[in-house]
Amino acid sequence: MLQEVYQTASEVELTDHLGYNKNNKSDNPNYRNGYNKKRLKSKYGEIDVAIPRDRGSTFEPKLIKKRQTLIEGTEDLILSLYLPKV
Image (cartoon, rainbow, N blue to C red; front, side):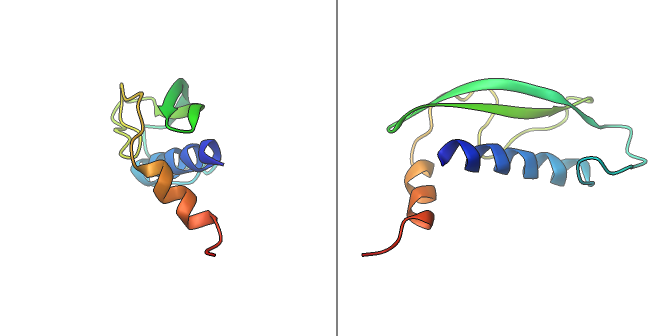
């Protein structure tokens, strides 16, 4: 579940940065340019995520920053949003 949330969030961050949705045409000279694979460590284990990148190298991810390998705190927040309250 955490992998899917981090993956989707990074895709949305790039879409916001570029200003257009994936597979849409745009006049923006900067465009999607594959992924960088990253292994993140959390208290629930290791998570493999593919962080999207842009051709101009101007994309600075906010949730999972460049060169970040340790996740602290966000995994509990994400799980609390999905788990039912008892």
